[in-house]
Length: 190
Image 1 (cartoon, rainbow, N blue to C red):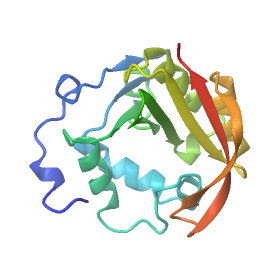
Image 2: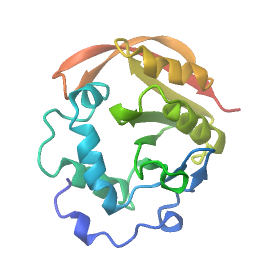
Image 3: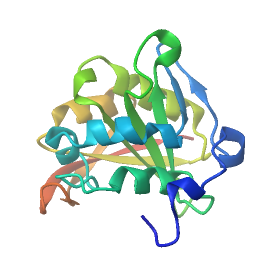
């Protein structure tokens, strides 16, 4: 968490104030995070398999990490917009995972996502990514994404959502404390 930023201090949590649209799909809505999501984010991201599928989630999850993540997502000066995958209107869990867009230079964004392990192989990730791509809330001309090479499920989500393989690379994984081979993907929006 950034110094001086506490979750309790954040008053702005509505979608309009965050300039993040609420995006509806057949089985859930994508909505901005809210402070009440901290518990489920902690629950899902404390799973080693979820953490090791990301670049930035540590394992074990240190105290305050989820609170810091939500606080950054609600900050008015953030560079990453994060949406909760919320199935509560369809008798599913209030938080199934998250999907995000990080602003990059040149009218480009990087897409990221994770799904709670209990919801893997349900199509939720593909549905969330496709909905975010269709909405294109950043007005990006190009989206980038990556998947660790030992996570072919995430690679399938990207290719099913119209991303094209760009090449191999490596990214640091905090949970693994190592560089991990990745597949990099691109989606042209124009």
